[in-house]
Image (tube, rainbow, N blue to C red):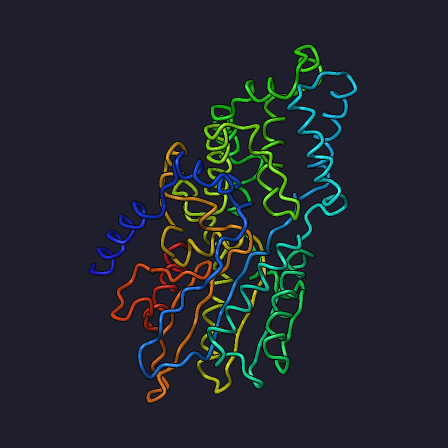
Length: 424
């Protein structure tokens, strides 16, 4: 009962302090309107000193790939083709001509790289790794056991490689066992049939979302700013699709080297409305949406069990160790919810209110990561404590602790197992 009361109080506090996002939140940093395209924001990791007598010996990590280009070259070329057609028909406004020139410039970088990790993505993972080894050098000794596992997707493999390269630069004597294989997919990137069915073409959420998106997509003003000929628009432009295509370009520009701005063609309200749609889609399809009845969070059950089992193996060993894992936003979102990390497992029924308690740019920006840092009491080796970092920031779990940001591992382990069991 005490833990239930504590959880309720913490959730209320977190919702008011961090979980909410409104028009002002987006207006003050338009990059956040990109949702999971938000470039990794952390430049300095939290590092509260451990209680006296405890030293780090194990790190358990899961990281999303870093900043990437839009998922397909077609995300660029379909807009480029339309704007070229309008240019040849003299159907672009001066702003439309300028946007076309910007897109041509962006495509000199992005051509042939759809879905690839960008140079910024590599730098993000190098920075995360550098801060990790600087803050916990005891874990990364010459004799440490370091494993790194990645999904089969190239942007995840390159993220893993960049991370490991950075560790090796800090300690060239490190030996890291890294691999990308189908062998690890059942926990690195897994979804259960019930979740897939909910998200599929026959799932009812698809129609609910379609109506939600229709209500919050208002393209007429934007289209009139880009195209000067209404007849051309009537014949060749789908206003709804065009607005969303431009939103993707604007959202991902922050992840490129050129960082060419497309936000100026939108109003802050338009960006807020489009982000609410993107945010709603991610929350309902991957997180703790009550109407999904726990289906999505159970996608992370294998992963959380792997984290628990790997930690227990590390505790039983005398060798410092780290388990590094690399995957996707669709994996880290349910993991944060299943773990009950603050502001990541809100339960909101009304799609119109999702943004009031859950924000995708907070939960899963590019290079999002979870780190569990384990410490052992030198005088009592069985006394293990742990702290949870989400995007390198110390976070609460909804369990009691007399040493926050640290928790007793036995309490955390019991809590995690109860979360997995309660969702079955």
